[in-house]
Length: 147
Image (cartoon, rainbow, N blue to C red; front, top):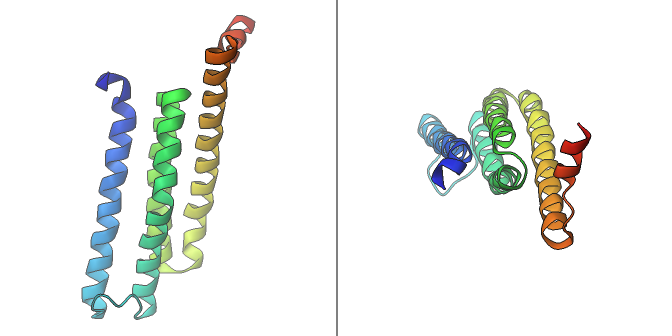
């Protein structure tokens, strides 16, 4: 069973390490700019670093949900590949945002596209599973016969 999920688990763990790294960078920025908790505002560089990390935290549950759903119901390899792209895009987003507000846009747009792809794959997988389970009609089997 665990072997069936290894790619999804590996991408999830990598993304969790990335989240921890972003938290560490916020702490480092706090020390650099002398922003004492619980304060969440300071110089613009700290504000951008803090917002970048918070924005990553806000989208993380959505990412994990669609990653696992797409991997479980559609295709683990494709979902995991998109998950790795998401981690890369989050890196671009975070570091771009720290540099400038406009610097985040490339990573942001890439993240949106990846989340849309994962959501679409997850929905397609669920629909196919539902049709197969309850109506004895499998789209994937029908498509395989055609090609």
